[in-house]
Length: 121
Image (cartoon, rainbow, N blue to C red; front, side, top):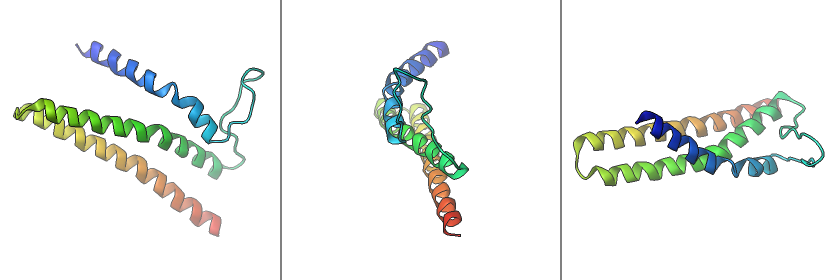
């Protein structure tokens, strides 16, 4: 049963994340011809630029995943139908989803704060 759920999760993740790869590459300034060469999507000269581009990519991939996870948690609440065990599972799922969202957005905000502080010095 666990293997079936894991396979389903990986399949859904692959379907949603595969189209996101070119979008992330375009968003971070991907400027090479993939038909002629192997392209490096992260062109940066400093550690600051490198971290910024990695976090931007994580944000652009993570936000849709968080939105889908919140929608899934809503379905868990609806499917619980008053069953206390299923409600606990749904509450745990929404709690962990919101904690993950806070960590993702907090890391991005903290990196922006540090970056702006260092650049202003």
